[in-house]
Length: 184
Image 1 (cartoon, rainbow, N blue to C red):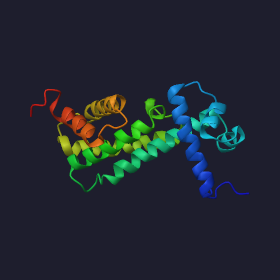
Image 2: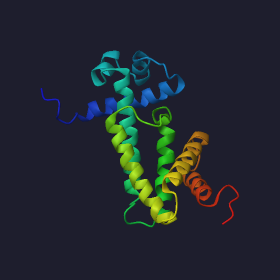
Image 3: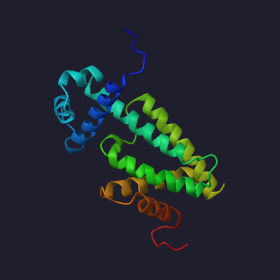
Image 4: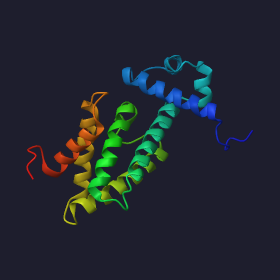
């Protein structure tokens, strides 16, 4: 059997269910076992081990999935064609929601796998290009990105499940652009 063929739809759903269960279980207990993840996912332990060789492999797959979602959100905001502020708002609102769903997985500054690190680096490159358009040539783009990521992290960390992502995005961007006083 070839290992490069696409997964069947049910196998893909099974992997997603396992990763979602792992996110929930590991958020509550970062030391949770694969057995606890399997139980939460409602699958046999063997199924988890068949899909993911180890706990680390499971977490790496989760990080890659989360960073790919962020990358899709950033690209869906049309960073190369839409106005920078529009891009930033749309991407921020979606990323806050993604961060809420992947609190455990996205807690690490640098993902474990090289593949997830590559996706993260691509996202950061687009992010810096948007900041360059938004803030002008004299701005410290790296600092702006770091401040933005800190604000984004705080927004996601303090958000309630029913928080309005648009309102949170507005708060993040207003703080980034005008500081906490809100004066322009």
